[in-house]
Image (cartoon, rainbow, N blue to C red; front, side, top):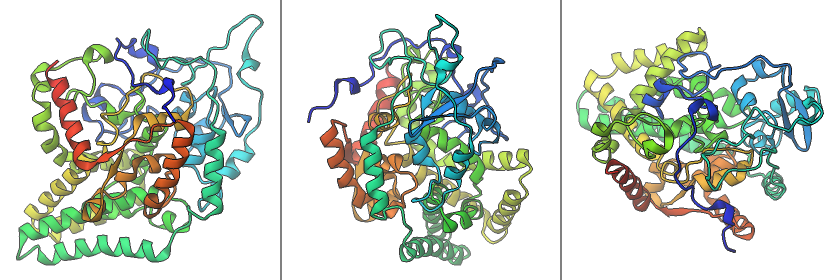
Length: 462
């Protein structure tokens, strides 16, 4: 079926002022993103930007499964931070709730039980005075430049009922269940690379650096899967990233869940706000400061610079854990750094961080940053994911290196599904998308990386 007209690629137009768009990523976050702390003002730690909050007596409310919930009192206690609820105020959060939360069939029901305890309420019209028009304070309000093709009505977007049916099919068929043998295999492979690198560190430093760098890359993918996953096993392995890579689970979860909830939404998703290191959009479109001296070289230094991904993530992880006085995370980080700098030669330790960082940084954003970048979000979670994400068609060793990032769209639609089920789920979702007019984008890894290089080059020469 032809792709629906409302999914045409975003046409560049001058962006409104930052305050008009409710931009949540401040200048400091922009400088380091996607390596930076989350673009969230209420997350403890090293967060940068702040959102001006005006006192209001109106409720913060979300619609889930057709019911409106009063989240005013719950917002500050929300494990994902209060900003997310503020941004989604007045919108249908059904699809994003099931994507990111524990609701039962995906291994745990904690979030579903908490949701059931929240007070129900009427919709946003409850707060209107006679004759007043509905204007929502969250992402339901248009944030597009004038004339942009994706400016939606201010009313909340509806959840996709057909997508709910697809999710329930996956639930009934056990797609969210963890396979102990596959879990053991991927963990053993990752730890084996660490063990081999450690063994070779004293005699073959180059081989050791490569082995540990590959291990750090794979540990990053695995920690990513554990934090998204639900159930006792994933909960027990939550500190895996801290022990193996020096990453804070709390810092990463807040940052990454904003990316999942507001994928490629300018001003909300910190992973696409990279200036002045990288310019993914014309500065005249974003309204953010230009740096022509750096921008004209960005396609040449862009990929080498990704080697510092892990170094920056480590820095923000330590800062976040320290600011939150998180004793558990600080203890895990202390164990990791004690091993890293006492058991390994300094050159091997630092070199492996650069290798691992490059292998992750060059792939982790490649499937998003040349896709559609939007200036609005109206709660249509599924539509946004298809418009902003491309999958990679890879096999064999190349698939192993991508670590599940090749099935990025499947992952964004079903983040709590184990990554070793993604490739089997892909044709099911492709068929579902074709029947409903969604554009399921997939290219070879060479095409994707080439597209990223050419995109940086194109913007370097504007």
